[in-house]
Amino acid sequence: MLLSYQRAGLYLMAAAAIGLAVLVFSQTADATETAQAATSALKLQIDTDCKAGDATFKVQNTGDAWPKSSTFSIYRILGEGKGHVISKRRMRLNSGQRASFRIKASKNTTGRLGISIDPSWHHRDRRLDAKLECR
Image 1 (cartoon, one colour):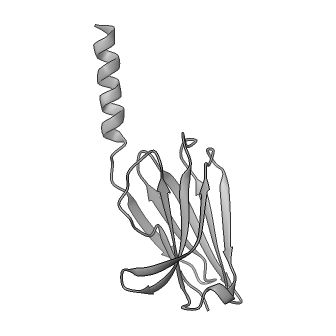
Image 2 (cartoon, rainbow, N blue to C red):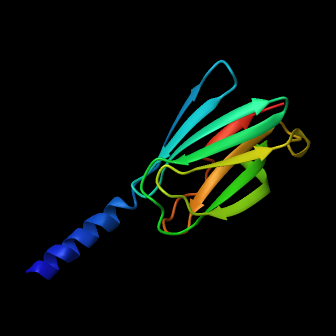
């Protein structure tokens, strides 16, 4: 009987891991933007900033420590649904850990950037977790 309860718990945890992500954007007056992406497998706070054409993405893991690494990709947005990867890095974040990514104005020729986080242990649809317009 104990084995079947454990197995049921594993099924519930697996079902919870395939939840949908929610994005909430709020913009403040000083060109800083905050986005929150949350699923049961991935909980993030992403702050963006633009100073003198240099763009910064600050990502914080607000959930549990990640079991494996994720791919962080920075895109130069070319148009609706089109982009070009300008930077990519694999990282694993502990609970509360932050990672910052700064893109110099010379690499930001379109003035529009986005960041996407793709966890290796959890399938998510390809999408941008946060966008930034910076000139």
